[in-house]
Image (tube, rainbow, N blue to C red; front, side, top):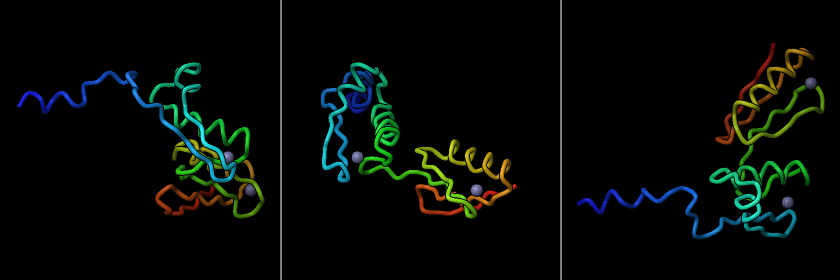
Length: 115
Ligand SMILES: [Zn+2]
Ligand SMILES: [Zn+2]
């Protein structure tokens, strides 16, 4: 019976296959050894890669469903990997501009944030 407890005890940095990320917009695929070996972001390598990819190319790679904050009154908006920064962006935009901002979650639910 003791064996059944062993499967999850491997240390988190003992990664034996490097995760890969692909992007059909770029038509390219990357393994995340740079994120793991140089940036040392461990189990956040995929997230870090996605954010860097967005920052430098303007879009997220495949298999990433971002939170999307989009103003209903002006062209401003942004995409986030997590709910909290997306929510904060919406609140701050509404606070400064008085605009209502729609916030679409990775579950496809849309909420409206206004002042
Ligand atoms: Zn790309
Ligand atoms: Zn606005």
